[in-house]
Length: 365
Image 1 (cartoon, rainbow, N blue to C red):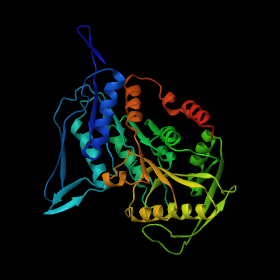
Image 2 (cartoon, one colour):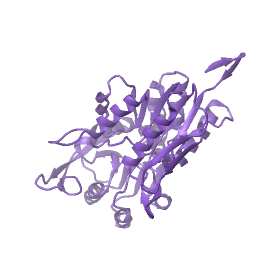
Image 3 (cartoon, helix red, strand yellow):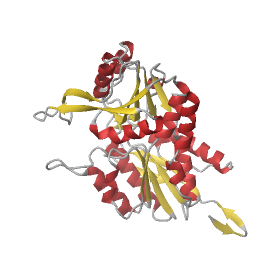
Image 4 (cartoon, rainbow, N blue to C red):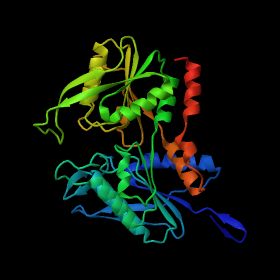
């Protein structure tokens, strides 16, 4: 903020890219609520495409000395443009390129740039196996080189990728408390057991179990290392390690659902072992192979409900499914932006245990 004739001028501005417009508008509204203002924080931005697929970004409002927050969803596959007469659906690479175009369009006139990328670009390509590219690390270094001052993301596949940019503030938030708040308010849970679908998600499962004061179990995935299918070694077998699931309400937690085949296999095994109810929880529901398998699995009583967030694109018809529940995280982002703009600590936003523990006590789980 700066003073002008004794009057405080608020320089907070949002650049909401087309791929996250719905969530961005909610963040804008939540900021008005938090800050008690009627100000529209959103800057007008045009994202144009030429017929050969090349693009450009034009900022149509002043950005001089503004505290800029760019919000983008690199996972939105419903953003389209016409290329050579064909409707083309944008992928993560194109979305990331538009982020860089936006930064370049600012031309250095801003006071500060914070990039909010809920789904971290190339998050699953965070480590090298053989002669593979380290895409996520390179992307973060590119952003630093372009002048980004702060990066905010949610539930990164491996937060240690921030080691690629040791001098750039990188915040990885978990929507765990927001998801659990919705879950506890909407479901009648009894005798809870938290399950990690694989070893990689065990830390997340332990945190859920700690908040819910429950046991935790894990599935071990045995893979066929001799083959690669859709970029991965196919899973041969799931082996469960943990306490008895009979008559338990089981929460299967992970950072994302890609195709979902592994999650459905886990759900089927848990029901066969006598679980009373099975809830899938994932920050990002990508459904890379559609939702038909989930529709069928729900009818077959493989699981009872899926909880996910609106931090990445979800088609409207998915939200209407009886087994699908979307947790709104717009207020999370608004609170982060407000705290950063006011130069306040982010620690209170990282710790929401008290509210969950209170809800848990009221529910007598």
